[in-house]
View 1 (cartoon, rainbow, N blue to C red):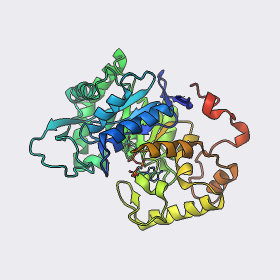
View 2: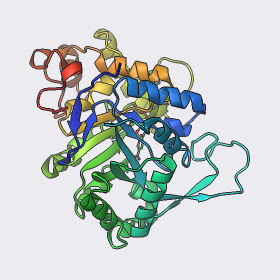
View 3: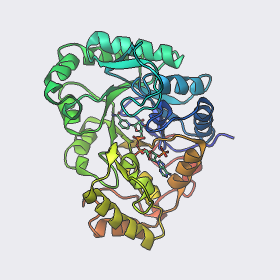
Length: 361
Ligand SMILES: NC(=O)c1ccc[n+]([C@@H]2O[C@H](COP(=O)([O-])OP(=O)(O)OC[C@H]3O[C@@H](n4cnc5c(N)ncnc54)[C@H](OP(=O)(O)O)[C@@H]3O)[C@@H](O)[C@H]2O)c1
């Protein structure tokens, strides 16, 4: 039986996404391999659980994630799909064996080339549909535009979007109804504010920058999004892992695609102590915290096997006391102006069956 999870709108569009979405970088073999059958079972488990928003990208396993996501979603109505533009995949016959490239294990034999121009965006959209084996894509994100990725080449790549017609291509696709929404998919806030000066964004997939660990987006980006009616999809809600694993397990602790620095570990330890006092799983707080902001439409953890799906559902539904959220704020562990979930008494008791008051399903 497919369950009904609460949905929230994307910007001012007719799209509604489930509060819990599926981040499919994992299905591109991010960090470790996922077999085809595990990938299928994972996506099917998510669909069965009522997760009705999937995010993928050409970059994730150089086409592998899109192929797997498309195979899983084909024939299912009502699931919102986003993928990305900005990198075109070029066949690379020099690829040998199953070495890791760009963090992906055994990716497909392609290499990514940046192209944010008009032609690049249209070509990316067309080839994504071919790989997905789907006739429509709901949301396109401009992937990894900005200084964080492009450094000194930022002006050049951003120029492709503005003067080179990348934004114009996206506006045309949205205007014609070929896609329903577009935005950026990035790990930094500065580029979002810069892009918003040029174009109306329906939604921003902001990875790792509005989490239990970091809320500086409250100072500038989130107020700008409130003003423009732009939704936020929170990617990387565990900041690449440390907010799911905590600090006490053995082995490497992952933060922002790398090894966590000591300052981050110290901060997570403080969060863990509070969680322990209130018997709250750290990962549950990490998954639920961003959703307290009204601009956030969905939180999309990376899900790489069926157990992770089940676990994410449990964490998402875990009841967390009002005192935990208040203490989190009173002890200065989150930004002073960060919204926290409304007191339980003000919430619908049937939240998971009927949707949240004020957020049409
Ligand atoms: N620029 C962009 O547009 C952008 C950037 C980043 C992310 N995103 C989106 O956001 C999605 C999620 O990001 P992400 O996968 O990088 O980061 P994430 O969700 O913050 O963290 C994923 C990591 O957390 C671990 N994890 C998840 N659940 C766990 C659990 N219950 N217990 C222990 N460990 C757990 C996973 O380990 P296992 O591998 O062992 O399961 C994985 O290594 C992506 O798939 C993508 O859709 C977009």
